[in-house]
Image 1 (cartoon, rainbow, N blue to C red):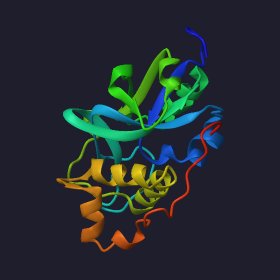
Image 2 (image 1 turned 90 degrees about the horizontal axis):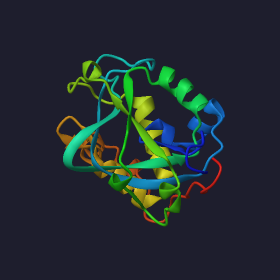
Image 3 (image 1 turned 45 degrees about the vertical axis):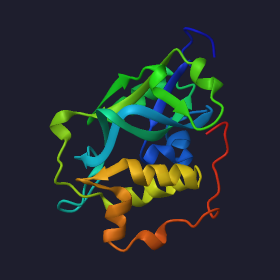
Image 4 (image 1 turned 30 degrees about the vertical axis):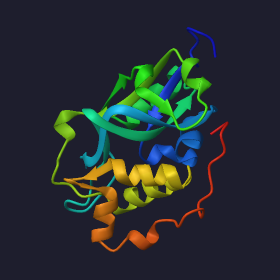
Length: 197
């Protein structure tokens, strides 16, 4: 990836698109991916869905928004071209794509790929789509948990701790609903391979 090329663009994904099967087959991304932390953002299930179906208040999907002392974890997909973004811009029509400063991104491990990117983008929910009264869409929540679990236990733990449902963490929300037993035990989760998604 060289400076100025169409493939020197990164995309930060923080929900269902963290699952490699959600991004690669649908959008033709042939890129490397790595787990990262993004400083200055907060993630919550307060987004009205653009295309997913949900029942009553159980229709919330994830969004991020700037928040000073907060951070979230995500997957940085390297090597996204303009065609991928055209497709995603339509899919993510309830969101706005914004650039994230490279200095706000901290890889979980080695991350030379970050420095090789010209730009890094993330989709944040449009303000008119925010609804703090929403609860997670159950099928979407399950997909996000599976996606986070695939990046390892530490990544999953961070996901549960930095994702909000109303005023509580996703971990607390799941425990209040008896879902804690669905979380993996230490060492039980595999990892997605680094490399082509």
